[in-house]
Length: 412
Image 1 (cartoon, helix red, strand yellow):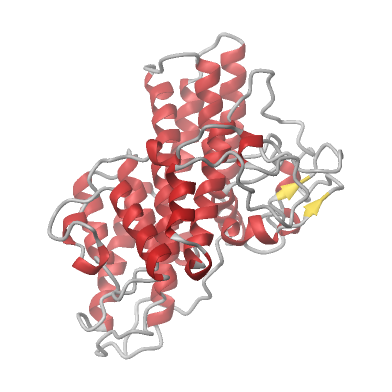
Image 2: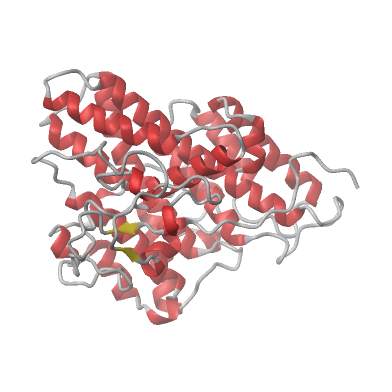
């Protein structure tokens, strides 16, 4: 049985935020994680206001967890978080001593569904009938999410009969739209010199969507494994006031992924520090705006780091799928149990995320990547070797487009 060098067994790394809001402890010392200057390089201006974007990050996580615990959450509960009145609803931060306890404490009047793109998803018309509300027709993210919420909340489903893990799509598709799509659009406008409205407010919104804390260095430690967070904590009481401000002392999903992928590259000996590149550019761009200077180059740097993080996530979860296939015979027809359905769902969802902004990949390449990953796990449809070839094609397309180091690609 002959294998590519890229086919190897690996453990699926648990996404940081997928457990972070529930499990992360609050480090009240505010200590440095072992790198940098204890946060003197900070994103801090009197006009900073991005509560709506913080709520959007919190809701994406909250909905993902609740869909994954479908039997404990009704369709009404899920629908209200997505479209209804949320101001008095408790935040999913029970293990953290947070300054805010309800969504309204962070920002009021946020309607998540109104922020989601209604553009048709690439190859959405190819989904099987059990996986879409619009068989043989185009479908958008809003329609797909409502369908998943209905399946989870009304019939307690956590997956479709095809192996679509509903919680992965609920959270990860919201990371694409509105979070990545909205944030990337703002930064692209700055980079292109076409931003409208108050520049400081627009820049702060992009910062809020990316999800960094106001000071980054106290959260980082690239030397103690692949996660990259000092003590494994996404929450830190930096100002030592006894509680965590969820708008300034917390690392949200995209920032967490940027840190994790940066740490993996650092530990592999081929640094590619998406996290610091993005954070420093966001700080410097905000300073440029404050001083009346042009922030376009800083916007482009932050945007490039964010897009690359999305692309690396596709590679990361494809690698996880391949790790599960690596012990199987090449000629075996793939069956249930052969695919890590959680990893498959994340690879698919993150590939869809790139539809909402990509400078490196065109729609034809994205279509090919999505086709290679498949409409659903290919149970009874493909042999192991054929699917591995497809996954390697998808990975190579992404690696070539972004110029990623080949060793990092193997180890992400």
